[in-house]
Image (cartoon, rainbow, N blue to C red; front, side, top):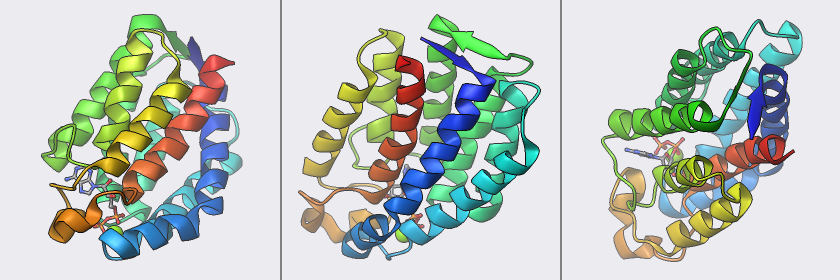
Amino acid sequence: MKLTTEQLRSALIKAAEQIEQHKDELTDLDREIGDGDHGINMSRGFQAVQKTLEEHGEYEDLGALSKEVGMTLIKTVGGASGPLYGTAFVKFAGAFKGKTEVEGAELADAFHEATEGIKSRGKSEFGQKTMVDIWTPFQEALSREGDLKAAIDQALADTKARIATKGRASYFGEATEGVQDPGSLSSALLLGEIAEVLHG
Ligand code: ADP
Ligand code: MG
């Protein structure tokens, strides 16, 4: 599995379209177990990313692309999720610096760093019904070159069944059981488009 600069750019544009299509669903889920802004936050952020990527055209390398995406997300998404998604891309920027394509262990390590970045920024762990519950299994599947889409589907089902113990959703306690976590769904949409280009 190999990721090129142009593949990441096209995956992000497709992810922005997916976020837009799921905007209301993301907001409805966040209304149930949050404050009802996740779809609005993500739509604002990924519309800005899409615009930036389309206007910029080709990027020098994966690092430059990731850095611009990270900065755009930090500036535009807001909420708890903005700095978390922003951190993931800032970590990619470091791992991908000067590289026009990455594969194998190098690619898996970059996703490991991004996931660790989210956890450290959010003071969160796997199993708390947050986006970490998607990023962690995705990164693990990537390191064993497994089926990324199957890993995402399984992770979505698993996190849906959990009770939230982190973030705003944790205030809703047992009522979160069986309700999808909005940040897990948005992460699945984003990582799903990356899986699509990686599986080729
Ligand atoms: P807010 O909770 O500030 O309204 P959003 O609604 O945009 O922000 O994002 C909520 C999502 O962010 C949650 O569904 C969850 O997946 C994720 N999230 C929230 N807090 C954390 C955290 N501490 N660590 C990891 N992810 C988190
Ligand atoms: Mg919210």
